[in-house]
Length: 178
Figure 1 (tube, rainbow, N blue to C red):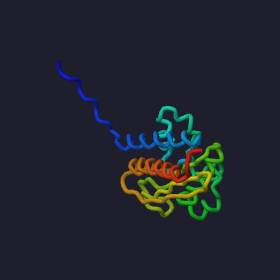
Figure 2: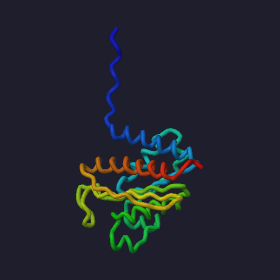
Figure 3: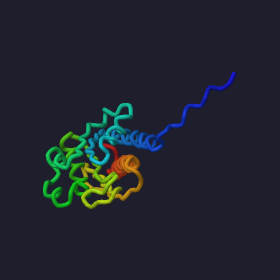
Figure 4: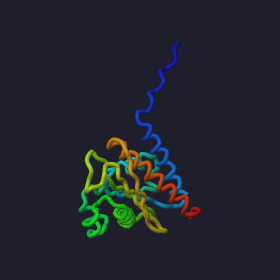
């Protein structure tokens, strides 16, 4: 009798890596009795989907806001309208304000946000691949900026991984579990 066929290789190794990061994020949050909420523009819900793909996510994931339209960043997330008027939605301070806004709006310990240009065309003078990830927590806010290369799907997926890594690093530097 022949052996059963091997299962097919996962078609999305980046998704598998993101899932592993999301599992680590949830474990770290659980260890602190903390929660996270996300605000997404560039990733359009992909970050939230990655987080909720982990069983038991409801214990640490509060929810998300996908504010793709610039006016929603101001009206829903509280991003400064003057900042948006001067710099547009693709700016590190916008990412920080989005993270802080979603953290407050959804009552989470931590807020995480993504904004940028996935392509195929530049936006507001920013080249494709410009990415800003915002973080907000009890110790303050910050943003990480990157310039990524690749097609739209790759830029979006890479941003999800980078956002999860930022949250993990921030949790590690936040000190011992509460």
